Image: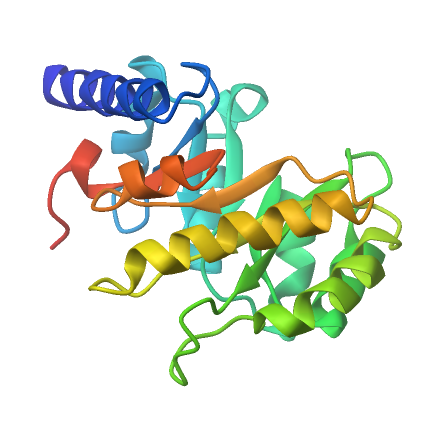
Length: 226
């Protein structure tokens, strides 16, 4: 327990320091604790240490943890941060609070149709392929405004913002800055976006300097994955 608690506090301190360094309010960035591949017991420990938002890459693994931790459900926020196939949208619409990886209108439409009416709107981020890698999912920047307008108009969804995973290396800084500029462009167009999901354990400082409002950190909190 102490190891996760100390790692969580160290990560929060790192985020605060990055905000201050970037001239932003100390509480400008939310921590999304990435629990993929770690057991429900580790999520329970992290919750006891103060974490509330958890990110899962795989639909079935995430659903299993949501079920195992049903006693904590009102206190936890579950984010799908991995790929979502259109044939798996229903359980995600019914069980998760956020989806960060929407890059097709068909997936958004299915989530909208399948979100239960008694739940709050499902929070959506559009995934951007900011590095232009052929192997990566996501929209190219030029494709974003049109899909953003379409998703924002769907019922039972709330378009919150953008998500990206910049390619590590010499071009990473420019990619972070390009994401910040794209986010600002969409806000200026009139879309009420408030979330730029950008930055992980290795690059959160650069992401926060570029305007990230949510960083996704897993290994720095839970330790190395098997």
